[in-house]
Structures are given as C-alpha cells and as structure tokens.
Amino acid sequence: MGTRSLTAFIIKGKEDKEFATMYRQFDGYPEGHGLQLAEFLNKGEELTYNGMGCLAAQVVANFKTKCGNIYLEIPGDRYLGEEYVYEVYTNNKGQLMMSCFDVWKGKTIFVGTPQKFIAKYKVKETV
Image (cartoon, rainbow, N blue to C red; front, side):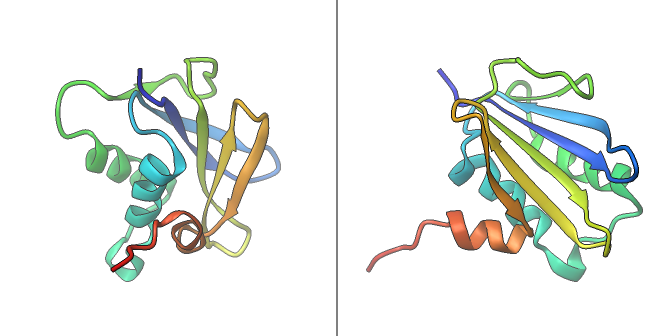
C-alpha cells in the first residue's frame, strides 16, 4: 500500500482559491514527495513561471512521466486516502511557499519556503 498525498495549488487573496490538485498514489510522505516537490520549487532563477497556473502545469509535467501514480483531481477534493496534503502558494511578498498537513495527526507539520522544507526533511548522508 502506498503513501498517498495531494498537492494543492492555491491563489492567496481575500478568499484563498484552490484551482488545481495533484494526487500521488505512492511515496507521498515528506521525505519522498514533499522533498521532491521542494527541490523542484527551489530551483531559484532557473524556475520561472507566469503565475500559479503556469507553475502548477510545470510541477505536474515534472512528476507525470508515465501511466499511473500521478493524477489530477477536482480542486478542493479531499478524503481520497491521502496521508499528507501539500499546498503551494505565494505569500503577500510574492515569495513561493509550501505547507504540509499530516492527515493522520490532524495538524500542519510545516509552513515555509521550499528551501526550509529541504533543510528540515533532507536526510543527511553519513560517511
């Protein structure tokens, strides 16, 4: 059985609007999908996008390389068996942000920049 996750792309404003949701059937835990997502979002100037819709399309294209595992779902849908829900958005300063909600614990376990997510969840290699 896989660790399922959702990645929601949010436009922040007076009312937050989720407009795209990506479902991942396997490896959805923070050290898996979360870290891969953060590393993709942390490309600096190499990552250019024209609004959140453009960024969402690039993320899906990055993860969807073959049949299965990655699917698009109806924005706002939950209770698809997900253990983690990631949100991608920009803050009021235009900085790219992400959060991670642990469904089983019922709490948000991370809010911050992709760079901070990497610092928290990247496993340090020992020699």
